[in-house]
Length: 142
Image (tube, rainbow, N blue to C red):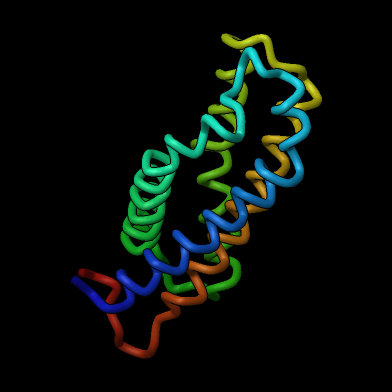
């Protein structure tokens, strides 16, 4: 595999895990704890951590793979923001709106989920663009 791909995958995975903990563990933790009928307890969720890790590994790899296929010859920072916005409208906003439609979740919690994950995905977009900056004549193909 391409060195930049693997480096990007690792960087996105680590930042995504840390960012998800900040958003969902720290910022939204009390909101989730207030709805024990909807979410696993902290003690119970530990047994499911391998699924969380595999999920984030897969998301990070797909995130980098899609970015590397769609990169254009534009400044990397704007490229990352553009990519982050695309992912926000492809996955973040629709996912939480669908959850809101089928689960009895408070609207303010859904808004916080969307805001927190949108900021995180923008950061991830800029991160992957920064790691994958093109040098003159370089190709992104794996």
